Image (spheres, rainbow, N blue to C red):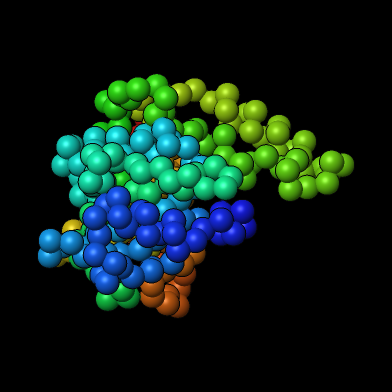
Length: 270
């Protein structure tokens, strides 16, 4: 977690967030979080997530964009974790801090359980691809209600700013800039490029009665659909929940079934 965020976070911030969502403090349990503080809580016999982020990472409008996209996908029939309003009716609660503000958001907890090695089979691979295909198909018709809510594009990510992390004379800076220039010049159309999850790996969804329930849209942004497919393949092939003696055969098996599911919903355009 970013040091400046961690240093500013206090029990008072958490208490204020709990108050604004009218949460019983006795039901709150810390789940952790890599870039935000994430808690589970119970209310009206249901479970929810409380996530507390900071304006150092995301603006209020940026999170509003995430929530609006979630609502859109939910209305399209996709199983995603909807955001819920605070007692004030706000989808994002802003709590002032010494430097910037903390931003509190609450979501319904996804149904189901974490993926296990028993679930890791051809049926899962196909459903995984089908779900991603549904997102890519749906986003072709997506429009923002407010331009201020528009999410970032893939090439705006801070990780791609090599000069921030390398010495000024490092040859990789010019190499990366050259490749980014080529990639950003590729043609974009609604069939090849759009707003999507961009982090659809096996730790960001649960299984409920065999169906996928997707959550954690914190990184959602604009990218080429083929890049979004590549992100999923990276995690699934590099970190499977099962050990395979013949990794090459596993790669082929996964890709074949994943793309079979994907192509049920989406046709790849050249």
